[in-house]
Image 1 (cartoon, rainbow, N blue to C red):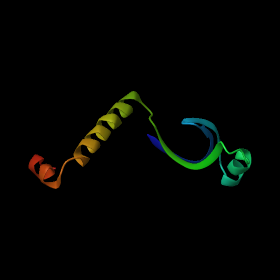
Image 2: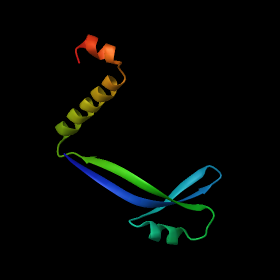
Image 3: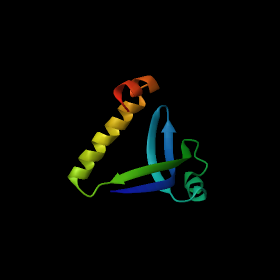
Length: 85
């Protein structure tokens, strides 16, 4: 399993609740230049982490672990203690 983190600058257009992705750039300066002075185009910094699996079993195990982590995060300290965590 690999984690790949990507940081980029997204150019998107927005008009009356309609948002549309246009392009990603590695540098903010390029994104702003591409957006230009168009009032409907904007730039935002985007960070994403992709999890790349090497097998189906790995993906299934990871999914179950993530569900477990999220469920445990919802418990209070007292509830965790009662359940033995």
